Length: 159
Ligand SMILES: [Fe+2]
Ligand SMILES: [Fe+2]
Image 1 (cartoon, rainbow, N blue to C red):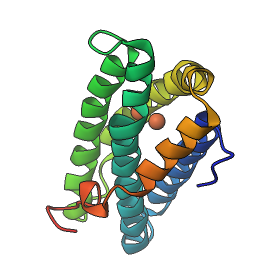
Image 2: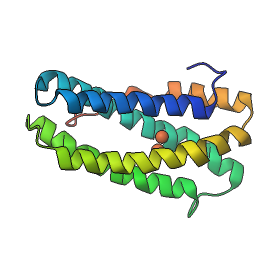
Image 3: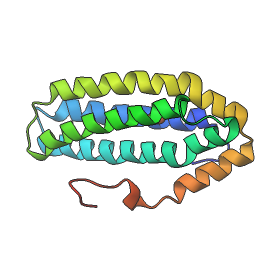
């Protein structure tokens, strides 16, 4: 988590990392379910962490700088996170039953994430980079780092 990094670079990289984990899960689920499950777990924790980072640190930065919250873009992004979370849990339910038949739920999640991430990458992240100083971003990255794992590392109610 280098402090030189922009919000855009850092968060886009995390989107890409999560995309790769999900692809690994999809690729392996018919041949090696145990490996696919590991990839899904890493994806789930990673996505939950990404959402906590955005909602606890990044979006408040935007809201503070612009005075926009209710009805603004971060309000929409938070609502989309709830939908993303629902699809994530739908797939998780299948994975927990060792059931690879989750193509529909996967497609729904990918569609949600596709448009959501694109809006963040094209509009929100660059705007936050514009609005913040390097020091403010460094503080933000540090705050993200200090968030305890228990906030996002949950699976089947366990850590
Ligand atoms: Fe997001
Ligand atoms: Fe994001």
